[in-house]
Structure formats: C-alpha cells, structure tokens
Amino acid sequence: MSSIHDASFLPTVLIVDDTPQNIAFMAGLLKERYRTRIATNGERALQAAAMLPPPDLILLDIMMPDMDGFEVCRRLKATPALQQIPVIFLTAKTDAEAEQKGLDCGAVDYITKPISPPIALARVRNHLALKAAADQLRDQNLRLEAEVAQRTRQIQQTQDVTIMAMASLAEARDNETGNHIRRTQHYVRLLAQALQTHPRFSGFLSDEVIDLLFKSAPLHDIGKVGIPDAILLKPGKLTPEEFEIMKTHTTLGRDAITRAEQLMDEPSTFLHLACEIAYSHQEKWDGSGYPQGLAGEAIPVSARLMALADVYDALISRRVYKPPFPHEEAVHIVRQGSGSHFDPDIVAAFLAIHESFRQVARQFADDHGKDRHPD
Image (cartoon, rainbow, N blue to C red; front, side):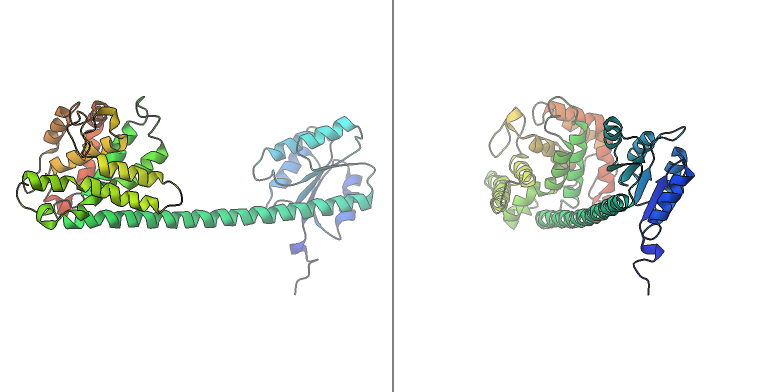
C-alpha cells in the first residue's frame, strides 16, 4: 500500500537559482517532504514550469543573468496555464523596494537570504496548503458550473419541447398548416437578424431577444385550440359571423399565455413576447387589422415580424380557398403590402433576404412539398 510519503503523492517544488550551492542547500532542505525540480536560469525556469505535471510551488531567485526573477515571475503570471502556481522569492536583496516589486509582479511571499530553514519550510508548507485549498475550491466550482450548465441545457430542452408540443396542439387541429410553425419561427429569426443593426430596431433586437422570438413564435396560433371545429376546419369561405369567431383566436391565445405568466414568480420575457405575438400578429401597419386595430409603431415589433412571416407562409402554402403561390408571386404580394399591411422597413429587410425564406420553405416542406409550391 502506498504511503503519503510516496513520491507520487508529494508536491513538486521548482527551485530556480544560478548558484549551485544555493540549489544544493534548498534541495537538501526539501528532499524529505517534497519532490524537487531544478532550473539554473530564467529561460530554463519557464521551460521547467511548463513541464507536465506543473510544479505546485516555485522558489525563485531574483539576481540571475539574462533574465532576472522579476521578469520570470511576470511571464509566469502572464501564462494562463501557469499563473496559479505560487511563487516565493528567495533572494539576497533585502530592501523594501525590491520586496514590494516582487509582490507586485505576482509573488505570494519574499524570503531573504541567509535562509532560515524552519522559516523557509513553514512558508513553503503554508503556501502549498493554500494552493491545495484554492485548487480544491476551483475544481469544485468548475464541477458546479458544469452541472449547472448541464441542468440549464436540460431545462431549455424541456422548455423547447413543451413549447413545440403546445404549438402542435393548434397545428394538429388544422391539417392545412403542416410545418407552418417551424417555417414561421425561422422566418421570424431571419427577419430579426436582418434588422438587428437597423436604427429603428437595434435597441430591441439583441441576440437574447432574437433567440426568445424564435422560441415564442410557434405559439402565435395557440388560440386556435379554442376555435370550434366547424369553423376552423370549414372547407369553404367563412361567413362574416364565423370570421368574427375565428378572429378571437388572437384573444384566446393572449389569455392562455397571460394565465401561464401569472403563475410565474417573476415576469417572463419569453412569455411576454409570446403574448404579443399571439395577440397582435393579425394587426396591420395601416390600422385595418385585428383585434385592436393598432397601427404603425403601436404594433409590437414581435407581432410585426410575425405578421410578415405568417402571410408569406400562407401565400406559398395550399389552402382550401387557393393553391400555393410561387415564391416570386408571394414576394410581389408582400412588397405590395409595404406601408399598408406591413412595416415598410421590415418589408425592405425581407426583400433583401427573401431567398433565405425560399430555402427555409424547402427545408420544412409539408409532406415532401405537395402542399407547398414546388418552386
């Protein structure tokens, strides 16, 4: 059985000095308690410190040719893999200015020659104990950070799956929509990214908000769960009365998300954006939309982005009342809606990236494209 005095368990101390007598003295003093590594100048000290496993502590002379101890210490502290190794200066320089300089460049202690063996051993022991405790705490923090990161990923994945499951409830009741929720969330993200540096939108469209928009977009039609089948699945044109009922899906969606948000201990940006999108994505720039008849800047940015994404996807998809339109025709219709249906700047962003919309439509085509125009 190995004992605590086995070499594999002993800390390693790097002794750096250009005088053989000093090296022999310190090596003899430490040999019963520690493994030692020797370097006779600054360059070799840096090489020895970089050897694996790295030393646990460095005893460093100051007055050496070519590179003095101060410069060696500065280079050690500038190297991420080595900067945690404690450095103790062993030197004949006894002035306070030199001691201050040594501590300022990163040393943990400063011992003047001639060396007192009990003092040197005590300080080496104490600083190794401090390093061991710091290493243990750092390792524990890294493990905790990794565990928190893993659990955060699991929570995010659970949230994403739950969101898609909720959105699919509405989608499953409307057999025309297919991959509509997947396509529209990608459209929204493309538009938001294209507008991220625009003066009107840059203050709102941070990377975090864009990520939340992508996640909340699938809930835009969640209120359709509350629309009667006779209206939602009607194969023909809705009557004015039926259309009024259909329009309530915006309010139903808002109310459902608001109730969920009220269960939270603190406000949720994600649910707030989802609520905006569900309630206001049918509003139009000129105020002719529903449910509130909002116009212009009164319409939340999130809803304005979804409005264009939703209409484009409806245009290129088959509906009971129309065939799927070609991409070029959908682009033309969206362009015509600038300033009436849609925010003109959002339309401009769409026109600049519309080929990316086409690629998303192809990637998430319904049933191999049978319900989407095969352009």
